Length: 423
Length: 175
Image (tube, rainbow over all chains, first blue to last red; front, side, top):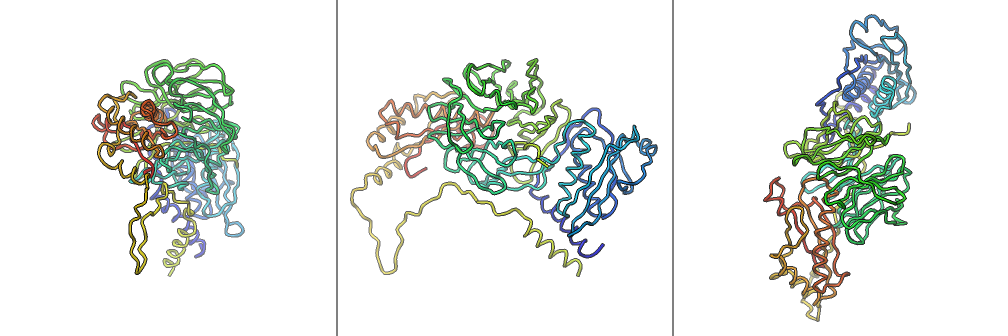
């Protein structure tokens, strides 16, 4: 390895350790019942980068809770002959092999192949050209490929999450990779920031900032850092939710009295009232088909979830059990709804099958808030509290896979899982 | 030698690939209204009529210096013990029609942040309504909510929560 290549690799490692201080640490606290045993061999070729890419793939698949890693031994290139009997004996149902080779302009070419050990067949592979700094991103894309081939639904390893970190006198709206790495601050403020919501294309965040001594809704373009006020009317402005078309927002305004639902364009124009009640209507969320807006209302005497057609009309009550059901969030397929219910003084993440109205409490914590579905619907991230400190947690929609996400210095809260990246 | 090169490259990397300079949001700008002393001159207070200034000095004293109204759990009713305080503020606003007030409603931390924001709004609106019944003009008062975001006390017990279920009254120049 030449000095330059060593230096490039050192830069890559430094990127890892540099991010380590600010990153979200993810701890697996529960896993699925039937995990797929998979071996990810070290990739052949450039040793440092090859190893780093394989490490990301392994960490992603293991963290998902649906894979069990099988020890892989020596590096194996994507075109190497595979001894299927040997891998079967080691207990692997699937095997990933690959290589990293130098390419033009200091870049690297990463190739990999996924094998079905049981069927003794290749399930395909891909090649990427990347810079040394893109090792993690490439690892996530390989993990996404493996996940989709073996589970038949897209992986979420290349997605991002937004959340708010509160440290003394400081609030930061941060965006990190789904594995908690590469945290970047989009907005830092001395005043609170709440309710971040991703635009459907993943380029913008709507949120509520209190920087002018009252809640105001902003829309923030992540690539440029530019932002504009979307709603700043007399009173409070809050709870932004994007319509699936990415042009309109539902928000809560108090300009006409109590907290009520309105729709407006993302640039703040064309304000229209959506529903009206004598009490509180808040926390709007569009169904994925754009047909309905689910929301929290105390119109029946206690906070419950209701829905109204996005074009207006009659309001239908959705939750009936208990005296506190709030923050409705629909799954990407529109079939289930995550929300927070109060059960004997405990606030718990709950899932409802919208067709049967069957409900399941997904956690055993007691201060759950702000659920947000991963774009494949498999995991739900939410805010909770452990030992008086704000943490994020994620749970699979069947309640089995559990993760805890925390930062070293501060409370972390208000998670929002971003959409799929367009490759 | 090699180690040195790595360290230098590392430093360059951190400087070069680190987070880009995002705008630092530091809340509302605070204007410096203090008179600046110029060498060889003496600054003297100007005592022409400044009703706004006099009014704003008044709200820092006596009963008007009291700015908080506290609420019971799940309640938006202004309790009797705060009625004389609200009357004093209403009288002041009626007597000083140019002065404006911002009411910030607050909630304790339990439950949803957005729902708590709406609860704080209800408390702020209740106080605004009472001030208006006592003669305050609608355009003098804005009711907003800070929800559970600005707790006065941060322990998880009723003693703390009762301090956090409150309305704060801010006058022109204070918000």
